[in-house]
Image 1 (spheres, rainbow, N blue to C red):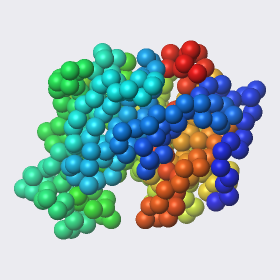
Image 2: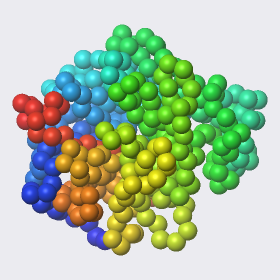
Image 3: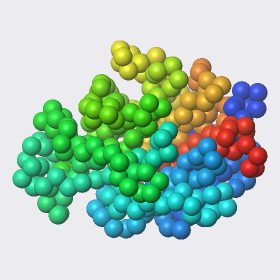
Image 4: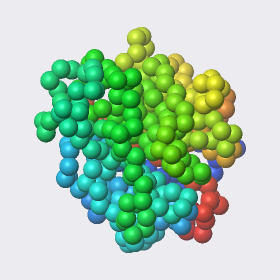
Length: 349
């Protein structure tokens, strides 16, 4: 892996998409907004440690998850969803101690998010695979729920994996613990209100119909090696960050643009050489209006933009370090680029 330095390391103004970049260090309680020079132009101080990430709404408000430290001790736990104005004032919040990973403001003004629920020990026998005897200490296995609440915090939609998903079709991998099933990390809300759901440990992406609660289609490919952040593009295709974990040979990640009707990969980005771009967890990618792709390589806190040809035209390395069991890292779960004239930014910076 090539050495890193902190801050802005690359910028081609003639080819990079001009705007502002927002990110939240994983083990911190701050969210930063950078200009194209890599300078911090705005910052939000969060009232608690970050749950996973933050995003801007078209109003300019910040939607963020913070940790409540209540509920199962699983990865990417949140529990407190907050909407904060530009000055950091809390204007809306919703508490669900089982909330984890992802959340989104729906086109109808509601808020959708992922949550956990415990599959009782007896029912969990239908879930096959995994390391024997490694079920959760509370008994049973945690699986996922999609919830949607209105601005008053009232539950208006719920999809329970336990009621709808064919567990027997997708066994847990033999080397994975049985305390959690499938590991959802994304509930992307489409303009039509339907959900793109992503289960990393199954290498599975599905489209969930909000009205019928049925799965419209699914894509599965173990070559992804786990994946994060599926997003629907205007052309109907989907981008993902294919992490590339547990693969034979050199470890490397890829950004893929997939046709959901055919399963065909119509575009991909990988490092050159391939092992210069890799992190087996977290991370994401965003297609920009100029056709470039903005990428968050999670562990190194590496945020960069590539052209359709794969040229790096902007790169920033986060200086915010934190200690994990694997050592000192600069992890970022997900980051975003907002255009200068976008509703999220216009007139505010």
